[in-house]
Amino acid sequence: MKILLTTNPGIEDIVEKEVGEKIGASVSSFHNLPGKLITEIDEKEIGKIFSLRSIYHAIKYVTMFEIKTSDEGLSDIYRNLKEIEIEELDNANTFRVTSQRIGEHSFTSIQVQKYAGQAIVEKYGKKVDLENFDVNIICDVIGSKCYIGIQLTRESLHKRFERPFNHPAAIKAPLAYGMLRMADIRDGDTLLDPFCGGGTILIEAAQIWDGKIKILGSDINSRFLKGACENIKAAGVEGYVFLKTADARRLDEYYGREIDKIVTNPPYGVRLGRERNLKELYWSFLNTAYRIMKPDGRMVIINLKATSFRSLILKTKKFKIVHERVVETGGLYPHVFILELI
Ligand SMILES: C[S@@+](CC[C@H](N)C(=O)[O-])C[C@H]1O[C@@H](n2cnc3c(N)ncnc32)[C@H](O)[C@@H]1O
Image (cartoon, rainbow, N blue to C red; front, side, top):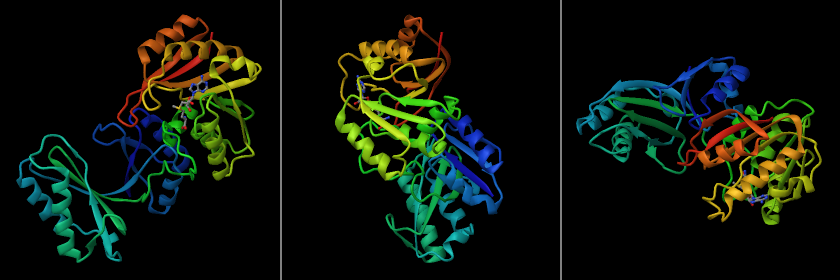
């Protein structure tokens, strides 16, 4: 069975590794589209898809057909959908169609949804329900090709743990997972997120390493830390994570030279308002982080101001950049840096 997987553009290699490890299947790019991958797996392995941490959605690939990019394309979609057999609809009462359109077309994705939906109503006699649907039919249009699929993930897999507290600048769990993988964490390591906010990275780590590593989190804002505490409890990992209020500009006042890995998402100065002195924050953080990290330690850090952050790292003369990549998240293109001590 062919399954389409969606992720953050920039961490496709992490999906490839995870799918290989957990399902034993290989993945390839889906039409070179960033963040979209395709894999082929045995039908009895399908349940394993839901344990993947690096993806948002999984879509069962049904078929592809050619369409015109002019208005006639809508009739092509209507006609083709009347011919396609969608077995998931047999026992369903309701459905919805969602569509993403990439390229130049004289119609909109809303029109695609309407024409595809009309064909299904006529063919199967099922009702459209945008909220309480039994089947979510994907009808994506990419240039002159239309792809039909069935979304297997009802909710995005990034919502994998309950969050009583929603941090305004929380990182998405699949990206947190990708960064944790880049940190090369080993059993027995001590991991710190010194800008932990609502605790996404900490919870992700606690669920993956399940007691095999020590996990520390801190934030300057005690309200966020209280929220992190609630989220950690709700995720059932409170025994594994230790929190304290701490200023990341003075980490050596709170921690000894005990940290193997730092994985963190400091403020970008976007969602939490303009940080007046972001450069000063990054500079003090890097210098103090150096003093609490073990000599063979590694830091994975995501930052939107890549150029100035890169020159700050080099200016410290304390860290070397061993890897840097761009990722996309929420319409922003931050860089993920992997740093090691010099
Ligand atoms: C982008 S948010 C982190 C969000 C977090 N990854 C999550 O998923 O919820 C950055 C965090 O850095 C914290 N922060 C800002 N300045 C700080 C400082 N000097 N020391 C420690 N934390 C700081 C903010 O309070 C905020 O919670």
